[in-house]
Image 1 (cartoon, rainbow over the protein chains, first blue to last red):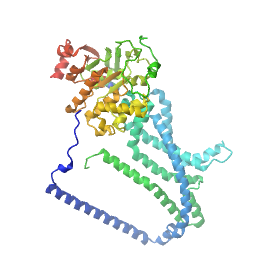
Image 2: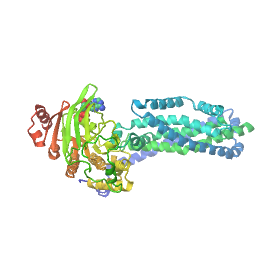
Image 3: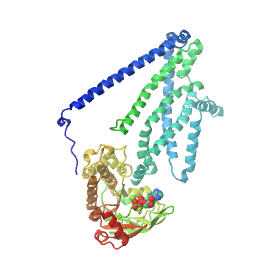
Image 4: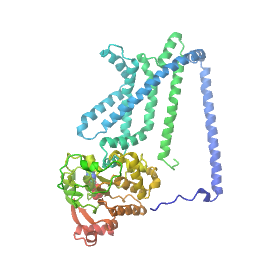
Length: 293
Length: 280
Ligand SMILES: Nc1ncnc2c1ncn2[C@@H]1O[C@H](COP(=O)(O)OP(=O)(O)O)[C@@H](O)[C@H]1O
Ligand SMILES: [Mg+2]
């Protein structure tokens, strides 16, 4: 058929005009100036903050209780070990959240009066757990389930914390996914169904993949905030990073271990935060190919 | 054997399945249980309303094997609605739809099985943007017909070569022109070798210079023996490929016949009026 061959290579382009050359020199100079200005203002800002901190009346005491190297290094291995537990819980919870959230979002996307009870249940679930503070969910699950007395042996607090995390975050993620599903144009479902795919097949093969792409930044955000909230399982007594720090603090009355834990959490989530930013930027670039604004 | 089977699912008989080895691409063959000359599609007294808007008021229409029927009519005359009812994308309010003799308006019918037997091409292509061109074409083969990926892709590549887009097999739809996308959509629709092809104004979203390549492909499908029911506003094209022109007006078939008759010597004043406006 009539296929256009790719246009001749750039070699055949005429040489750059003086006009364009001038524009490029100007833009280059402007770019360098912007970089210089932002560098300078950043440095000035950092210096001001440092001076204010160091100059504050309580700086000596604050430094010794929060940023004390004597406590920093000894605390590091113990807190890091605790963080390992946080990571394990997170890994399991993420899988649980993915499964439960997809099922919830799928249920809520069912059409027709027959499915009203299912839709209603899914909606009630998401409303409940989105509205309830995570700490409360943790307490209710962590202390409520063992109180029911189903098991003679004590139930692992790590397990209970993981369940609580899944309950809360699956409701957030389900809502994000549902928004994504609704953002996929109905004609896509129509096209999928007219190929003979079932409702489920169309959802799995056509709608969900597009929905997930649309909401990836939001999902990553939920993931990052989950990375932090996984530290709350310490309130149940699980010896995670925060709990490990707490133990040291209560023995030494020095708060540096908390800073250690905080830094470790930041370090742990930092790659994902960058990844989220990168994904968001890439999606934006894709959606406005060729635009200047 | 040739009596219209009032079939509940599955619609494809077991013999047919066995004779359709998964390793070979689906063949174009008339199902053995059909008597020759049985219409592929029979619409009997189709009624469809949207609230108080009575779009179809009793449509009787048959499409024979290898026949190309063009639906024409003003915008809003119900062409799309008629095509959707034939594919069970809209539920009819009354009447009966037979596909190769099977009553597919029976609520016990396997809806997905019926749709797998009918290919549809929409005005706005509706390709799946997250799938490559080849995956778009083979999705139905793999997930509905359950062909192995390798077999599905062999058939998919054959089709893409036929429509001149083999080089773009791994590209994503947004890299293609409108005409190319629509040709891929046609390839996707014919990949499972459907008994009937429904085309809904497939060129009306295209730039004029891209219309030709799509229409040429449809003409080629006709040459290869496809059974086609199409809504179109390309009167010249309808004249070229259609065996029969059906003019819809007021929810009924106002006039129908061979192109030479309906287009050149329309009997009904409404048809004359419509053609005067579109041919102007
Ligand atoms: N899903 C729908 N809900 C309500 N009205 C509809 C729907 N689909 C089509 N209609 C109405 O049915 C009539 C016929 O539409 P359509 O079949 O799309 O006509 P055509 O394809 O011939 O332009 C129009 O009046 C349209 O507004
Ligand atoms: Mg239409």
